[in-house]
Image 1: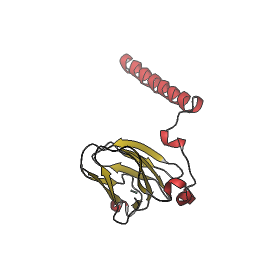
Image 2: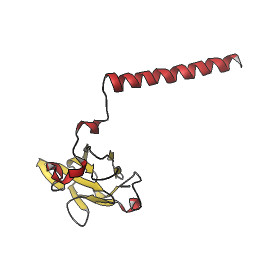
Image 3: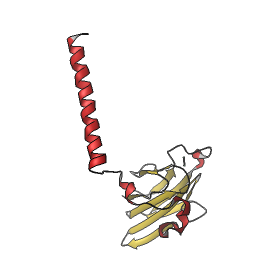
Image 4: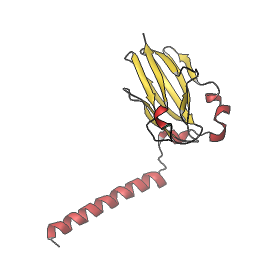
Length: 158
Ligand code: CUA
């Protein structure tokens, strides 16, 4: 084997080992987890959790809202059968969602909202909607035969 080849092989293996050690220490010794791991609930009784009894948009402060959505195959329950959420432009929205069945995606196309929704966990994210318009909430994790039908509409209005 060529000398440089050996050096690069060692360098590659050593850096791989180094990053695995760093990852291992942060995960197992320092206990770092994805942020959504902090809040759990019983995935079998999502509707009994106080957050998800009545999904939808609630005002919690001055231009500040709480939006709770129940994700399930193949639907987003936003609190109305039209599947439309109207958000006043400039509002800060604290979004909480969970799933009653399998893993789903939660992406509001054209915004920074993009989460994974896992059974047993509450996924949360805060976003300020500064630009008026119609946005589509889409599932971006393949979840079954109706995956492509799993959408809702977010309307940011003046
Ligand atoms: Cu839900 Cu794909």
